[in-house]
Length: 70
Image (tube, rainbow, N blue to C red; front, side, top):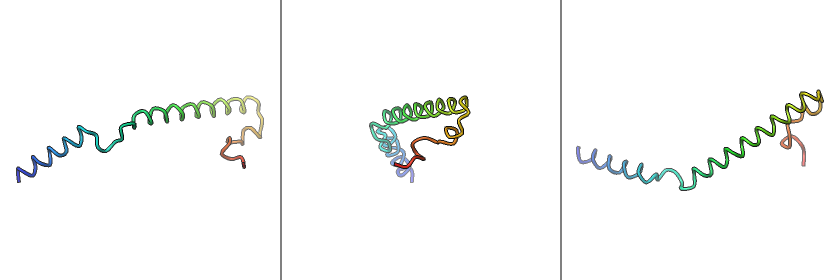
C-alpha cells in the first residue's frame, strides 16, 4: 500500500512540475485576450458616456455591432 502512495505522489509531482494540464502559450494568450477584453469594455464605456450626455435615445438603445444586421 505504501508503494502505491509513493508512486502516486511521484506521478503527481512530475505532472505538476511539467504542467501537463496547461499549454505552453496559455499565459500569453490569456494576457492578450484580457487586454482585448479591457479595450472593448473601455470603448463601450466611452460610447455609453457619449450617448448618455447627448441624450440620444437611438444611441442609448444601440448595443453596438452585435445588434446590427450585416
